[in-house]
Length: 403
Image (cartoon, rainbow, N blue to C red; front, side):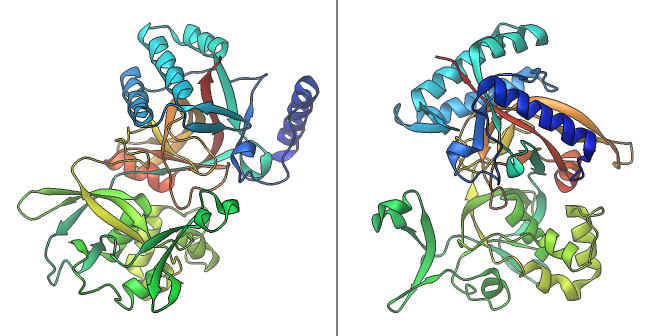
Protein backbone atom coordinates (compact mmCIF):
# COMPACT_ATOMS: atom_id res chain seq x y z
CA UNK A 1 0.00 0.00 0.00
CA UNK A 2 2.97 2.31 0.38
CA UNK A 3 3.64 2.14 -3.37
CA UNK A 4 1.00 4.51 -4.62
CA UNK A 5 1.87 4.24 -8.30
CA UNK A 6 2.17 6.87 -11.00
CA UNK A 7 -1.54 7.05 -11.72
CA UNK A 8 -2.53 7.55 -8.08
CA UNK A 9 0.21 10.14 -7.63
CA UNK A 10 -0.97 12.06 -10.69
CA UNK A 11 -4.62 12.00 -9.63
CA UNK A 12 -3.76 13.02 -6.08
CA UNK A 13 -1.65 15.89 -7.36
CA UNK A 14 -4.44 17.11 -9.63
CA UNK A 15 -6.95 16.99 -6.75
CA UNK A 16 -4.64 18.86 -4.38
CA UNK A 17 -3.87 21.54 -6.94
CA UNK A 18 -7.57 21.91 -7.75
CA UNK A 19 -8.45 22.34 -4.09
CA UNK A 20 -5.58 24.75 -3.55
CA UNK A 21 -6.66 26.94 -6.45
CA UNK A 22 -10.32 26.81 -5.47
CA UNK A 23 -9.90 27.41 -1.75
CA UNK A 24 -6.64 29.28 -1.78
CA UNK A 25 -5.70 27.85 1.59
CA UNK A 26 -4.96 24.15 1.35
CA UNK A 27 -1.20 23.67 1.87
CA UNK A 28 0.51 20.35 1.32
CA UNK A 29 2.28 19.54 4.57
CA UNK A 30 5.93 18.49 4.45
CA UNK A 31 5.68 16.20 7.46
CA UNK A 32 3.03 14.54 9.57
CA UNK A 33 1.12 16.96 11.77
CA UNK A 34 2.04 16.98 15.44
CA UNK A 35 -0.03 19.97 16.60
CA UNK A 36 -3.83 20.44 16.69
CA UNK A 37 -3.81 23.25 14.15
CA UNK A 38 -2.12 21.01 11.58
CA UNK A 39 -4.06 17.80 12.18
CA UNK A 40 -7.29 18.70 10.35
CA UNK A 41 -8.23 20.71 7.28
CA UNK A 42 -11.77 21.71 6.41
CA UNK A 43 -13.15 19.97 3.32
CA UNK A 44 -14.88 22.39 0.98
CA UNK A 45 -14.90 20.19 -2.10
CA UNK A 46 -15.02 16.43 -2.62
CA UNK A 47 -16.67 15.53 0.67
CA UNK A 48 -17.41 11.80 1.07
CA UNK A 49 -20.72 10.04 0.68
CA UNK A 50 -21.75 9.32 4.26
CA UNK A 51 -22.68 5.65 3.94
CA UNK A 52 -22.68 3.56 7.10
CA UNK A 53 -22.25 -0.22 7.16
CA UNK A 54 -23.51 -0.69 10.73
CA UNK A 55 -26.80 -0.37 12.56
CA UNK A 56 -28.02 3.00 13.76
CA UNK A 57 -28.72 1.82 17.30
CA UNK A 58 -25.00 1.28 17.93
CA UNK A 59 -24.27 4.71 16.49
CA UNK A 60 -26.87 6.38 18.69
CA UNK A 61 -25.40 4.58 21.70
CA UNK A 62 -21.81 5.62 20.90
CA UNK A 63 -22.65 9.28 20.27
CA UNK A 64 -24.80 9.37 23.40
CA UNK A 65 -21.79 8.24 25.41
CA UNK A 66 -19.75 11.14 24.05
CA UNK A 67 -22.55 13.48 25.08
CA UNK A 68 -22.24 12.03 28.60
CA UNK A 69 -18.54 12.93 28.54
CA UNK A 70 -19.25 16.46 27.33
CA UNK A 71 -21.84 16.92 30.08
CA UNK A 72 -19.08 16.47 32.66
CA UNK A 73 -17.04 19.37 31.28
CA UNK A 74 -17.34 23.11 31.71
CA UNK A 75 -19.44 24.46 28.83
CA UNK A 76 -16.54 26.75 27.92
CA UNK A 77 -13.92 24.00 27.61
CA UNK A 78 -12.17 24.51 24.26
CA UNK A 79 -11.71 21.82 21.61
CA UNK A 80 -9.38 22.26 18.64
CA UNK A 81 -10.69 21.14 15.27
CA UNK A 82 -7.62 21.87 13.22
CA UNK A 83 -7.29 25.66 12.98
CA UNK A 84 -10.74 26.27 14.49
CA UNK A 85 -11.79 26.26 18.15
CA UNK A 86 -15.17 25.23 19.53
CA UNK A 87 -16.49 25.14 23.08
CA UNK A 88 -17.79 22.04 24.79
CA UNK A 89 -21.26 23.57 24.54
CA UNK A 90 -20.93 23.85 20.75
CA UNK A 91 -19.64 20.31 20.40
CA UNK A 92 -22.49 19.00 22.52
CA UNK A 93 -25.08 20.92 20.49
CA UNK A 94 -23.50 19.50 17.36
CA UNK A 95 -23.82 15.92 18.56
CA UNK A 96 -27.38 16.49 19.72
CA UNK A 97 -28.16 17.80 16.22
CA UNK A 98 -26.63 14.66 14.72
CA UNK A 99 -28.69 12.43 17.02
CA UNK A 100 -31.78 14.37 15.95
CA UNK A 101 -30.96 13.62 12.31
CA UNK A 102 -30.61 9.93 13.11
CA UNK A 103 -33.99 9.90 14.87
CA UNK A 104 -35.73 11.07 11.69
CA UNK A 105 -35.10 7.73 9.99
CA UNK A 106 -33.70 9.34 6.83
CA UNK A 107 -32.54 7.05 4.04
CA UNK A 108 -28.76 7.03 3.36
CA UNK A 109 -28.96 9.56 0.52
CA UNK A 110 -31.00 12.07 2.50
CA UNK A 111 -28.85 11.62 5.62
CA UNK A 112 -25.67 12.19 3.62
CA UNK A 113 -27.17 15.27 1.99
CA UNK A 114 -28.29 16.72 5.35
CA UNK A 115 -24.87 16.18 6.90
CA UNK A 116 -23.11 18.01 4.06
CA UNK A 117 -25.63 20.83 4.37
CA UNK A 118 -25.55 21.22 8.16
CA UNK A 119 -22.07 20.15 9.24
CA UNK A 120 -18.53 21.32 8.76
CA UNK A 121 -16.37 18.45 7.54
CA UNK A 122 -12.69 18.22 8.45
CA UNK A 123 -10.28 15.68 7.03
CA UNK A 124 -7.23 14.40 8.89
CA UNK A 125 -4.06 15.57 7.19
CA UNK A 126 -2.69 12.07 7.58
CA UNK A 127 0.77 10.66 7.12
CA UNK A 128 3.28 13.23 5.90
CA UNK A 129 0.40 15.35 4.68
CA UNK A 130 -0.87 12.86 2.08
CA UNK A 131 -4.23 12.66 3.92
CA UNK A 132 -4.00 8.88 4.26
CA UNK A 133 -4.47 7.47 7.74
CA UNK A 134 -3.10 4.09 8.82
CA UNK A 135 -5.86 2.16 10.60
CA UNK A 136 -5.11 -0.63 13.04
CA UNK A 137 -7.43 -2.39 15.45
CA UNK A 138 -7.73 -3.40 19.07
CA UNK A 139 -10.14 -5.57 21.02
CA UNK A 140 -11.06 -6.83 24.47
CA UNK A 141 -9.17 -10.08 25.09
CA UNK A 142 -10.41 -12.81 27.42
CA UNK A 143 -7.76 -14.79 29.33
CA UNK A 144 -7.64 -17.12 32.31
CA UNK A 145 -6.46 -15.57 35.56
CA UNK A 146 -6.15 -16.13 39.29
CA UNK A 147 -6.20 -13.86 42.33
CA UNK A 148 -3.41 -15.92 43.89
CA UNK A 149 -0.16 -17.10 42.33
CA UNK A 150 0.77 -20.77 41.92
CA UNK A 151 2.90 -22.91 39.61
CA UNK A 152 0.50 -22.18 36.72
CA UNK A 153 -0.49 -18.55 37.29
CA UNK A 154 2.91 -16.86 37.67
CA UNK A 155 2.75 -13.61 35.68
CA UNK A 156 1.19 -10.57 37.40
CA UNK A 157 -0.63 -7.49 36.28
CA UNK A 158 0.38 -4.62 38.57
CA UNK A 159 -1.63 -1.68 39.84
CA UNK A 160 -0.01 1.78 39.95
CA UNK A 161 2.86 1.89 42.47
CA UNK A 162 2.81 4.53 45.20
CA UNK A 163 6.23 5.87 44.20
CA UNK A 164 5.14 6.68 40.65
CA UNK A 165 4.48 10.41 40.32
CA UNK A 166 3.23 12.62 37.51
CA UNK A 167 4.96 16.00 37.19
CA UNK A 168 3.15 18.86 35.49
CA UNK A 169 5.91 20.68 33.59
CA UNK A 170 3.78 23.78 33.02
CA UNK A 171 4.31 24.59 36.70
CA UNK A 172 7.95 25.28 35.84
CA UNK A 173 7.51 27.02 32.49
CA UNK A 174 4.39 28.00 30.54
CA UNK A 175 5.96 26.77 27.30
CA UNK A 176 5.41 23.23 28.63
CA UNK A 177 1.65 23.70 28.92
CA UNK A 178 -0.22 20.36 28.98
CA UNK A 179 3.06 18.43 29.13
CA UNK A 180 3.78 15.92 31.91
CA UNK A 181 6.44 13.41 32.82
CA UNK A 182 6.18 10.21 34.83
CA UNK A 183 8.96 9.81 37.39
CA UNK A 184 10.11 8.45 40.73
CA UNK A 185 12.19 10.09 43.44
CA UNK A 186 15.35 8.43 44.70
CA UNK A 187 17.10 10.40 47.40
CA UNK A 188 17.29 13.93 46.04
CA UNK A 189 17.04 12.84 42.40
CA UNK A 190 14.04 12.77 40.08
CA UNK A 191 14.43 9.75 37.80
CA UNK A 192 12.44 8.12 34.99
CA UNK A 193 10.19 5.37 36.27
CA UNK A 194 11.40 1.78 35.99
CA UNK A 195 11.46 0.28 32.49
CA UNK A 196 9.71 -2.91 31.48
CA UNK A 197 13.02 -4.77 31.76
CA UNK A 198 13.53 -3.61 35.38
CA UNK A 199 9.96 -4.55 36.28
CA UNK A 200 9.71 -7.91 34.48
CA UNK A 201 13.27 -9.26 34.40
CA UNK A 202 14.59 -7.81 37.66
CA UNK A 203 11.33 -7.88 39.64
CA UNK A 204 11.72 -4.41 41.18
CA UNK A 205 8.00 -4.30 42.05
CA UNK A 206 7.69 -7.85 43.34
CA UNK A 207 6.64 -8.29 46.95
CA UNK A 208 5.04 -4.86 47.28
CA UNK A 209 1.43 -6.07 47.19
CA UNK A 210 0.73 -4.42 43.84
CA UNK A 211 -0.54 -7.51 42.00
CA UNK A 212 -4.11 -7.18 40.71
CA UNK A 213 -4.27 -10.67 39.18
CA UNK A 214 -1.96 -13.43 37.94
CA UNK A 215 -1.93 -14.88 34.40
CA UNK A 216 -0.64 -18.11 32.88
CA UNK A 217 1.41 -16.73 30.01
CA UNK A 218 3.73 -13.69 29.75
CA UNK A 219 2.31 -13.12 26.27
CA UNK A 220 -1.18 -12.75 27.77
CA UNK A 221 0.29 -9.99 29.96
CA UNK A 222 1.96 -8.36 26.95
CA UNK A 223 -1.19 -8.36 24.82
CA UNK A 224 -3.22 -6.94 27.70
CA UNK A 225 -0.65 -4.14 27.88
CA UNK A 226 -1.14 -3.54 24.15
CA UNK A 227 -4.95 -3.72 24.21
CA UNK A 228 -5.30 -1.71 27.44
CA UNK A 229 -8.16 -3.72 28.93
CA UNK A 230 -9.53 -7.24 29.15
CA UNK A 231 -11.73 -9.82 30.85
CA UNK A 232 -10.18 -12.49 33.01
CA UNK A 233 -11.92 -15.79 33.77
CA UNK A 234 -11.19 -16.76 37.36
CA UNK A 235 -11.46 -20.20 38.96
CA UNK A 236 -15.05 -20.90 39.98
CA UNK A 237 -16.54 -19.08 37.02
CA UNK A 238 -16.15 -15.52 38.23
CA UNK A 239 -14.96 -12.79 35.88
CA UNK A 240 -12.62 -9.88 36.53
CA UNK A 241 -12.46 -6.77 34.36
CA UNK A 242 -9.15 -4.91 34.24
CA UNK A 243 -8.42 -1.60 32.61
CA UNK A 244 -5.48 0.67 31.90
CA UNK A 245 -4.72 2.94 34.86
CA UNK A 246 -1.46 4.62 33.85
CA UNK A 247 1.93 3.80 32.35
CA UNK A 248 5.54 4.14 33.41
CA UNK A 249 5.93 7.11 31.05
CA UNK A 250 8.55 5.43 28.90
CA UNK A 251 8.18 5.76 25.10
CA UNK A 252 6.31 2.98 23.33
CA UNK A 253 8.43 0.98 20.89
CA UNK A 254 6.74 -1.51 18.59
CA UNK A 255 7.79 -5.10 19.21
CA UNK A 256 6.19 -6.05 15.91
CA UNK A 257 8.47 -3.70 14.02
CA UNK A 258 11.43 -5.06 15.99
CA UNK A 259 10.56 -8.62 15.04
CA UNK A 260 10.48 -7.62 11.37
CA UNK A 261 13.82 -5.82 11.64
CA UNK A 262 15.37 -8.87 13.31
CA UNK A 263 14.03 -11.18 10.61
CA UNK A 264 11.80 -13.16 12.98
CA UNK A 265 8.76 -12.38 10.82
CA UNK A 266 8.25 -10.74 7.44
CA UNK A 267 6.15 -7.64 7.00
CA UNK A 268 3.62 -9.64 4.98
CA UNK A 269 3.04 -12.27 7.68
CA UNK A 270 3.09 -9.87 10.62
CA UNK A 271 0.04 -10.04 12.86
CA UNK A 272 -0.68 -10.37 16.56
CA UNK A 273 -1.39 -14.06 15.98
CA UNK A 274 1.92 -14.57 14.13
CA UNK A 275 3.82 -12.80 16.92
CA UNK A 276 2.31 -15.09 19.55
CA UNK A 277 3.02 -18.21 17.48
CA UNK A 278 6.67 -17.28 16.87
CA UNK A 279 7.42 -16.34 20.48
CA UNK A 280 5.67 -19.46 21.81
CA UNK A 281 7.72 -21.66 19.49
CA UNK A 282 10.95 -19.69 20.12
CA UNK A 283 10.95 -18.91 23.87
CA UNK A 284 14.66 -18.01 23.76
CA UNK A 285 13.66 -14.80 21.91
CA UNK A 286 10.85 -13.86 24.31
CA UNK A 287 12.73 -11.61 26.74
CA UNK A 288 14.70 -9.91 23.97
CA UNK A 289 11.54 -9.02 22.05
CA UNK A 290 9.33 -8.00 24.97
CA UNK A 291 11.98 -5.89 26.67
CA UNK A 292 12.69 -4.01 23.46
CA UNK A 293 9.65 -1.93 24.44
CA UNK A 294 10.47 -0.02 27.66
CA UNK A 295 6.85 1.09 28.16
CA UNK A 296 4.87 -0.66 30.89
CA UNK A 297 1.16 -0.45 31.73
CA UNK A 298 -0.44 -0.52 35.19
CA UNK A 299 -4.01 -1.77 35.61
CA UNK A 300 -7.02 -1.30 37.83
CA UNK A 301 -10.05 -3.47 38.43
CA UNK A 302 -13.28 -1.95 37.06
CA UNK A 303 -16.95 -2.86 37.32
CA UNK A 304 -17.74 -2.13 33.69
CA UNK A 305 -15.57 -1.99 30.65
CA UNK A 306 -13.78 -1.51 28.48
CA UNK A 307 -13.48 2.22 29.09
CA UNK A 308 -11.94 4.78 26.78
CA UNK A 309 -9.74 7.69 27.80
CA UNK A 310 -12.79 9.94 28.17
CA UNK A 311 -14.26 7.64 30.82
CA UNK A 312 -17.12 6.11 28.82
CA UNK A 313 -17.77 2.55 27.72
CA UNK A 314 -16.40 1.79 24.28
CA UNK A 315 -18.82 0.72 21.55
CA UNK A 316 -17.57 -2.09 19.28
CA UNK A 317 -17.01 -0.89 15.74
CA UNK A 318 -17.88 2.70 16.65
CA UNK A 319 -15.22 3.81 19.14
CA UNK A 320 -11.82 4.77 17.79
CA UNK A 321 -8.56 5.83 19.40
CA UNK A 322 -6.71 8.90 18.11
CA UNK A 323 -3.79 10.99 19.31
CA UNK A 324 -5.38 12.91 22.20
CA UNK A 325 -2.78 15.64 21.88
CA UNK A 326 -3.97 16.79 18.46
CA UNK A 327 -7.52 15.51 17.92
CA UNK A 328 -10.57 16.63 19.96
CA UNK A 329 -11.77 14.07 22.49
CA UNK A 330 -15.29 12.77 22.04
CA UNK A 331 -15.51 14.07 18.48
CA UNK A 332 -17.93 12.63 15.93
CA UNK A 333 -16.08 11.16 12.97
CA UNK A 334 -16.43 9.21 9.76
CA UNK A 335 -13.96 6.70 8.36
CA UNK A 336 -13.35 4.93 5.07
CA UNK A 337 -11.19 1.84 5.35
CA UNK A 338 -11.09 -1.93 4.69
CA UNK A 339 -12.10 -4.86 6.89
CA UNK A 340 -11.43 -8.58 6.52
CA UNK A 341 -13.80 -11.11 5.02
CA UNK A 342 -13.76 -14.39 6.95
CA UNK A 343 -14.58 -17.92 5.76
CA UNK A 344 -16.24 -20.68 7.77
CA UNK A 345 -12.86 -21.79 9.12
CA UNK A 346 -12.21 -18.36 10.60
CA UNK A 347 -9.59 -17.47 7.99
CA UNK A 348 -9.19 -14.14 6.23
CA UNK A 349 -10.01 -14.62 2.53
CA UNK A 350 -10.00 -10.99 1.44
CA UNK A 351 -10.51 -7.35 2.38
CA UNK A 352 -13.66 -5.32 1.78
CA UNK A 353 -14.01 -1.55 1.67
CA UNK A 354 -16.34 -0.09 4.28
CA UNK A 355 -17.32 3.28 5.72
CA UNK A 356 -19.07 4.30 8.92
CA UNK A 357 -19.58 6.98 11.55
CA UNK A 358 -17.31 6.67 14.58
CA UNK A 359 -16.55 8.57 17.78
CA UNK A 360 -13.11 9.50 19.15
CA UNK A 361 -13.31 7.99 22.63
CA UNK A 362 -9.87 6.55 23.31
CA UNK A 363 -6.13 6.92 22.74
CA UNK A 364 -3.04 4.70 22.86
CA UNK A 365 0.71 4.76 23.27
CA UNK A 366 1.29 3.78 19.63
CA UNK A 367 -1.36 6.13 18.25
CA UNK A 368 0.64 9.26 17.53
CA UNK A 369 0.29 11.91 14.85
CA UNK A 370 -2.41 12.75 12.34
CA UNK A 371 -1.82 9.59 10.32
CA UNK A 372 -2.83 6.94 12.88
CA UNK A 373 -6.14 5.60 14.12
CA UNK A 374 -7.15 2.49 16.06
CA UNK A 375 -10.62 0.91 15.74
CA UNK A 376 -12.13 -0.91 18.73
CA UNK A 377 -13.71 -4.16 17.49
CA UNK A 378 -15.17 -5.53 20.73
CA UNK A 379 -14.52 -9.13 21.81
CA UNK A 380 -14.80 -12.57 20.27
CA UNK A 381 -13.12 -14.41 17.37
CA UNK A 382 -13.82 -11.84 14.64
CA UNK A 383 -12.69 -8.97 16.85
CA UNK A 384 -9.47 -10.77 17.76
CA UNK A 385 -8.71 -11.75 14.17
CA UNK A 386 -9.44 -8.28 12.82
CA UNK A 387 -7.53 -6.46 15.55
CA UNK A 388 -4.58 -8.77 15.00
CA UNK A 389 -4.36 -8.28 11.23
CA UNK A 390 -5.80 -4.85 10.43
CA UNK A 391 -3.22 -2.50 8.98
CA UNK A 392 -4.97 -0.62 6.19
CA UNK A 393 -4.76 2.93 4.91
CA UNK A 394 -7.96 4.93 4.74
CA UNK A 395 -9.63 8.28 5.30
CA UNK A 396 -10.60 9.98 8.56
CA UNK A 397 -13.06 12.87 8.85
CA UNK A 398 -14.40 14.77 11.87
CA UNK A 399 -17.73 16.59 11.83
CA UNK A 400 -19.19 19.51 13.73
CA UNK A 401 -22.38 21.47 13.13
CA UNK A 402 -22.17 24.70 11.21
CA UNK A 403 -23.01 27.88 13.19
